[in-house]
Image 1 (cartoon, one colour):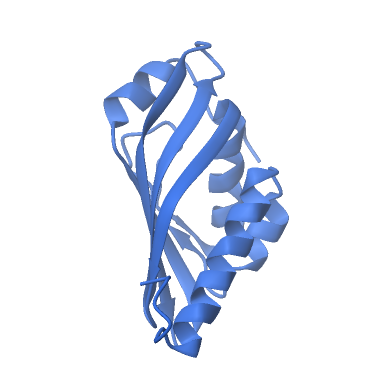
Image 2: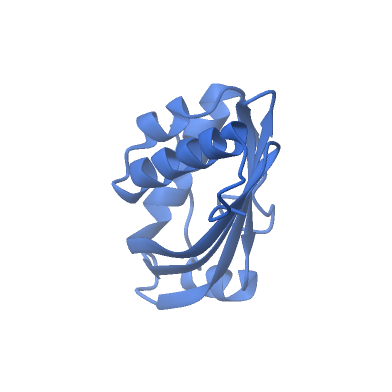
Length: 145
């Protein structure tokens, strides 16, 4: 757990890397978000307009821009993060306004950040309500990058 004083140094390093990634994405800084990854994979639900998987550095950049470009006033309220040597799990709430519809949404959102030998290798976002996301993003087509 992230608040456990007995957390390993590796778990602390993993948590710090995820916190830097969240700080970058909060300001739409896709380039610095990508810099936190040692390998590149995002496993987004394929049913979403910006669904994945996205692999490789260029894929990760394309996937993140497609996601960022879909929303206005996007933010995450992170409730807690749990960390160990292999992963960080973020428990959060996603808040945003779908650009194509102007629909404001709020739903549970979790993310599993996986590490291998201290390197961030993948992110798997878990949307609490993909039907709501699809409704808010109706008509959205990710930009070509």
